[in-house]
Image (cartoon, rainbow, N blue to C red; front, side, top):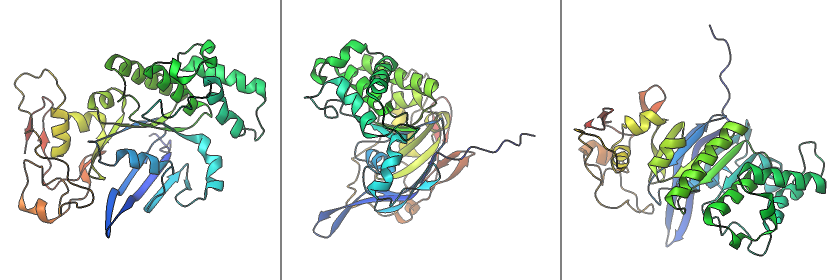
Length: 335
């Protein structure tokens, strides 16, 4: 018998919501009561169409955006309402890689200065200020870590390609040796060949440094390549979550099945789910009942009247659907 206790989650999100007031008495619900856990060493993929709230969720998890309701616990500590003064010592342990690599880098500063800045602002693990020699050594190590030459430290951001700038952003996020990294669409603005290089870099860094990722993306091919678990979002809520193989190859929710069917793959004899029709509803005026029923090809009366909760499909695999699909590994489904 294995008596080793299960590891505690690195981060726990409970009933997290983020609402924006848009005027005339109306509110936009960007994130609607999401609960999930992020385990140490895993890469949790967060996928969904543009506007589903996945980037907002990632920013709320790191308290870069204030939370309207709910709770965020990081390393066993509730950070939901911590003031910035008390949150600052935790910042080195949770970092973000943003989508737009150009907007994240000050065009008037050299790369060496940009990488050294967080090392100057935050104290070292021993509580002391880092010396100039230690900072220079760490900056060179970071460049080597992301596959860039140390000679490039004297250059400005505009002198790099998009892929190289994203490598610099990754290096800056890793400067303070974080435990959790939220990557917000980090490859969506890059060429396909460069995307593969950056995705491989994320995987290599995870293996070398033992990092934990929340990887936000809309490209299922990218998520399938790197994620250990996948959460699918639709209109501000998680509609399916579980191990990558279960969610992407045995999808229980019609929305997930439609997303996976849209990814080109050579499957002979498979009957893919019907394609999605219409557009995602406005988060200001969400439909009653199941939030997906206006586009679901299998909609029934109960779906229009009652909102489904996440429930277990199989161990570790949950879906928010009254009538979950019975999928097969060849890509076909039984409704």
